[in-house]
Image (cartoon, rainbow, N blue to C red; front, side, top):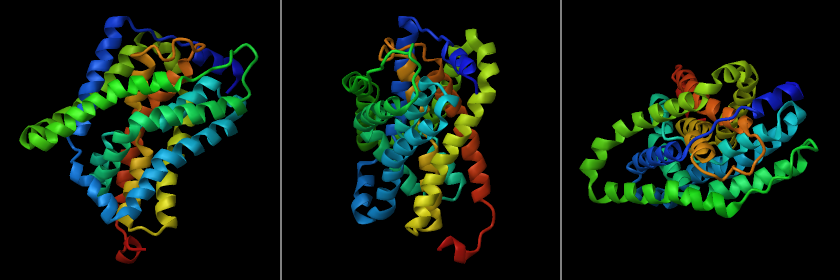
Length: 319
């Protein structure tokens, strides 16, 4: 990718009025409420009963993925713009995607482990998302070859934390309380809200880029490869760590899916529904990376599920 192409991608402008920003935040709050309906506080007991796979999964998602994403963005060098690199780190800093449990069930993976990891990463996202984005985003900008005309960026840890607390903390608490005290209501709402989250994300992408669709389609060939390699890295981290530590095959599948499916809807909502990035230079690169990630990880997740459903020997399953 040439510097001119990267600059053209960054120049894509997506703006939201106050009403649009509020709508995005309200819908995302409902989506996160739906995710929290599947979080039973008792799930966390399993962390202490059988901690190995849970700890490995949390390490993959909360530590290794953001760190290695930063390294990958640095390796890409001038082939991507700093904004695109930050978009990769924003996705990697987000919690696990709420369709990961569905993909895990299709993959004949350990669904209980999947739910546990989604619950943990989502519950901790109030702290881990702003911290990882600040830490690895700052590290990337320090080592990236930033053009002289791009001003130094300062990522406000407090602003990101404050926003995520509102977008995640309140809906999560409400969802967990509903699951605990109104389990029948929670069971009825889980699936509809899961489909709503997928529809919400796709709708948000379409509406956001409607006026820039031609520019988006022109740059997709470049974005596709970047997101493909980034998502492949995430999938390999999960399966690789599971293989190194010799957890059961079903757990390896779950680690693969949980690390490879990220809640990019949260990232897009932070970019579009808040003023956190208002002081940044043109950051269309962050938007297109985050938007395409949300579409691609559904495709890659279904592909991985298909591959995992191939017949395997019993010996391999317990290797």
